[in-house]
Length: 449
Ligand code: UGA
Image 1 (cartoon, protein in one colour):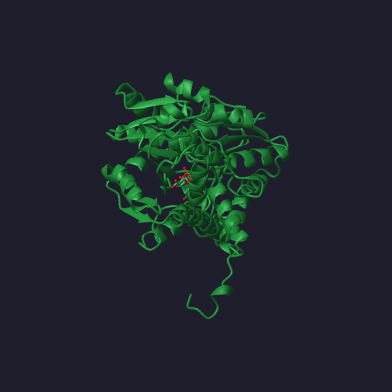
Image 2 (image 1 turned 90 degrees about the horizontal axis):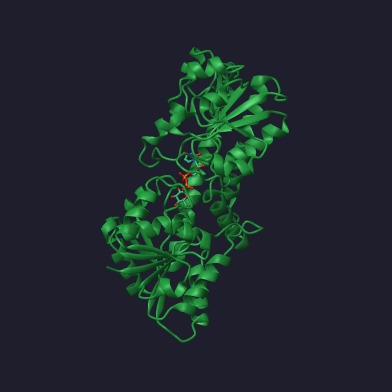
C-alpha cells in the first residue's frame, strides 16, 4: 500500500484521490478551504460527478481515504504528492499559477522525507522546472524530491470512468526513477504509459485539448456551410467519422465548447505561442469561431419569431454539457444575456444545474421540469444535450406552448419528426428547405455534377 497526498479537492483532485484510494492506496486529500474539507468529512461532495459520492464513501469507510487542511498531516508518510489545484485564466489569457506556487511552497516547507511531487494541474510549459525551483528554495533543509508532470485527461460527467480506463498515461520528468515510480502507481489501469521529459508532457496536455477544441470549431464551421448549402452536418460528421484518420468523436456541431478546460487551455496555449512569436493562426480562429456560436440562438429565434421583444423563451439545459452541474463558461450564460438584451422573457430548466445557475442568471425564472418550462412559451432553445430531453413527450410540449417553435442548439431532435409534429424547428447545420433553394452550382464549374 502506497501513501499519497493529493493537494486540492476540486474536480480533478477529488476524483484522483477517490480513484487512487479505490485502487488500494492510502490517500490523504488536502484543501486549504476548511468548509470544503468539513463538508467532505460529512459526506458532502463539493461537485456533482456521477459515482463520486459512492466512491468517496466506500474508501472513507475502508480507511483508505481521509481529508485534511493540514500539510504536515497530508505529507506525513506520503511518498507521492499530487498537485491538483486550479489554474484560472489571468487577465491576458495566461494561466494564473498562484495556487500552484502556494502548494509548491507549502509542500517544500512541510515535507520531512523524500517525495515525488506530481503535477496534474494544466500548467504552462516550463512550470515543472519552476515548481522544482520553488521547492528547492523553500525547503528549510535539503530533502530529496523529484517533479513529475502527469496531466489529467478526465472529462466532467465521466471522470471516474475516464480515470479507471485511460487512453494513455503521460509522465514527464528529468528523473527517470521518479517517473518509473509514478508509472507503478498507474499499472493497475493497464493503459499505455508515455514517459518523456517535463516540458513535452506539459505540452501534450495543451495540444490534446487544443486539438479537440479545433475539431469542434471545424465541424461548427462546416455546419454553417452545410446550412447554407442544404446539407446535414450530422450525417456529414457520421460519414467523415468512419475514416479512422478522422474518427467519429468531437464532431458534434452546435453551440460550441464551454467549461473550465477548453476555453482556458486554448487561450493559454495561444498566449504562450504569441509570447514566443510563433503566430498561432489556427488557435485564434478556433476561439473566434467558438465565441460566435453563442450568437446563433438569438439570430435564429429572431428570424423564427419575427423579433424577440416580449416573447417568452424557455431554455432547455443550462450547464456547459450534460451530467454535470458545472456552469463555468457555459454557452447558456451568453445566450441568456443576449436573449434578455433583445427583450425576451426567459425561463430555464436544467436537470442538475439550476442551483448553481440561478445566482448567475438572476433574471431567469427556473422551472421545475421541462413540461412546466414549455407551458406558455413562444419558443424553446436546447442549450445542453441532456439525455432526458431526448425522451420528452413532444406532443405534450407542443400543445402547451404558445407557439411551437424550437431552436435545437445541440441537434438532439430529428428535423423531419419535429416538422411532422407541427413544430417550426431549426437545428444547427441541418439543411432546411429554405436553404436548398439558394444553392448555386457556380462553385462546381469544371467538375462533373
Ligand atoms: C475536456 C477534455 O475532453 C478532457 O479530456 C480534459 O481532461 C478536460 O477537458 C480537462 O482539460 O480537464 P470537459 O471539459 O469535461 O473535458 O468536457 P468535454 O466533454 O470535452 O466537452 C467540452 C465542451 O465541448 C462541452 O461544452 C461540449 O458540449 C463541447 N463539445 C464536445 C461539442 O460542442 N462538440 C463535441 O463534439 C464535443
